Image (cartoon, rainbow, N blue to C red; front, side):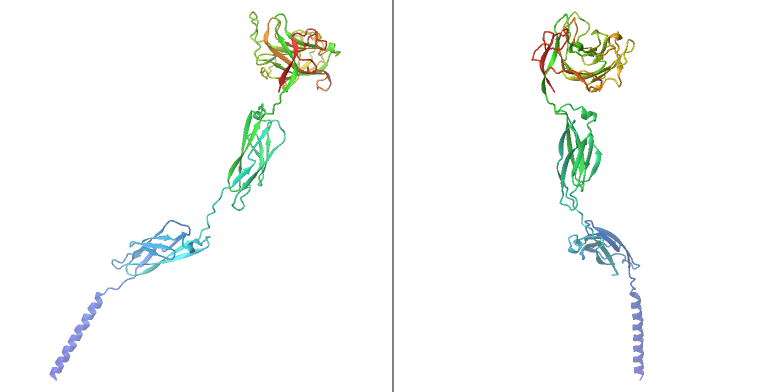
Length: 471
């Protein structure tokens, strides 16, 4: 009995020891606190992106050594690859060739790529990548513009210049032109409609345009045009001077080779049974050869000799004229008049002149009124008074017309030509009473009094009929 009690006591003692040992072991195992994973858990990328998406996670864990992530390297996801470092930094590379990604064609279409990440203690979290669709970039094909991109017009031709351009463009809705309406250009105005039809109106009064003298004188007007897609082109307008047609005409040629006289073509109206013209108009063309050098070494008045057009009353004397135009070397003068003639004279060119006179109110004390135009340009804005030194000689109007070259004490080696003389009995030039274009005479015929066909006065000297090319 005593033996059994001892055995029982021993067993109880051992049992108590085991229980105490078990409690100590349980206290040695620490309880795990789950980590908190925060940071860039949501991100977005465009379906056409070629740049890696990146983010950062923060691992918060009170347990020692567990505030880090379990790294991942080039892990394939649904739509790309994923990398995660222990410090929480991650990158995502989208697979732009994935069929589902390629199929996203607008911003309303999306895909999501969910990626599981874990901290060191096994706490998990999900990063969600949203992939947004992008409309495909439209690739523009530049248009081709053809048609009437270059045209030529003449500066004195009336009427608009027209043409058509064609726009070829494979892109839908872009085969048209950006219209322009009455756009000012350098030398005119330009309009074009969206179908490509254009109109160009030349400003012929533009100084540079009107100055073009022949077909070899040119200006260019460059006009930019644009197609619907922005493709640029230009239309080149070439502007030329007029077409010069040359004609051969018979004209009167005055020379001065005599040291005791001057070359002169004189018309006395009475010789043609024309009464003195109280009013009237004279038009004609003349050409003086350049370089009318004085050949008289003892005459020091001038190096060059003048040509003259004089309108006279009853006496052909210097200073007693209605008007006398002096054609000098490079310029014009009006005898005894303080009038500046802006026109310059160029030798060897045909010049058109026009005179009018009105002696309606002329008397022994009142001068007649006259006007002068050179190549259609008025010398003065209004009629001006004659300055005859003897008003009794001019008060009846025109009675003599005289063309002279050089003077009595000199000779010149050049010539002075006259053509298309027309005299009217009114200043408007409606009643023609005398004309001479010299076509009725034989070539080289003299117009001096020895020629019975000549209507000119007996003082006419050194004048013959020749041919001249006129343009």
